[in-house]
Length: 248
Image (cartoon, rainbow, N blue to C red; front, side):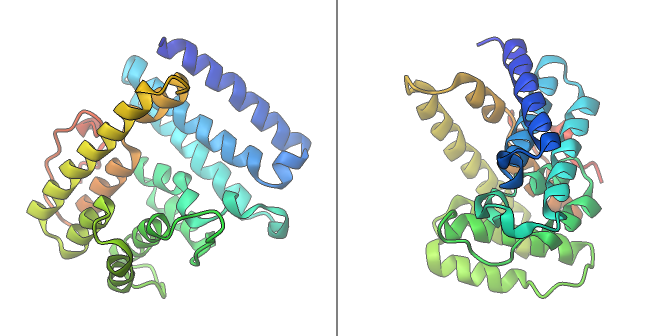
């Protein structure tokens, strides 16, 4: 599949979603257009990096995603927004802000996002992963919050302590560099296998696949948080390029 063609298609679809938001069509009122636009901004960011290793455009598009999500969350008519467009486990623009190393923006998004499970649209493990990231970012940046990362991990462990994301987050909480590296590599291997299976599906959307397969956004976010947690993490993983990691 030609990445440039996929990028152009994403840009065209993004323009449609932005126009829908401007025109305040029903998809904008429900938040669907916002979520779709955020997805396309992230995909375009990935394509910019894959095509030209353009870190500036990569970061710019991630910030567009994060700022658009913040705009949605700040709307006064929240009652009109579908749960799937505001629930915690679908909050990929929060991840985008962390990857772009705009931590204040990430905190604003987290503060306006639900801290409760929307069971009709999300799995509890996915919810707890994001909730843990919120709590960890608050703690590392000394932001007041009622969230407690240890309590979130304890709840998560009771539900599914075999979740590969749980192992990475537990190591992050404990500042255990060896355990973090081991858990992260295991998570990457599982993720790669999932994408390999997806790619073999005859109904697989190759453009959607390409927009997600080659850059592991949540992986970058986890490493950035580890860096903020004063963990000397040295990453050499294709889907987590070292040049996209926080150098501090």
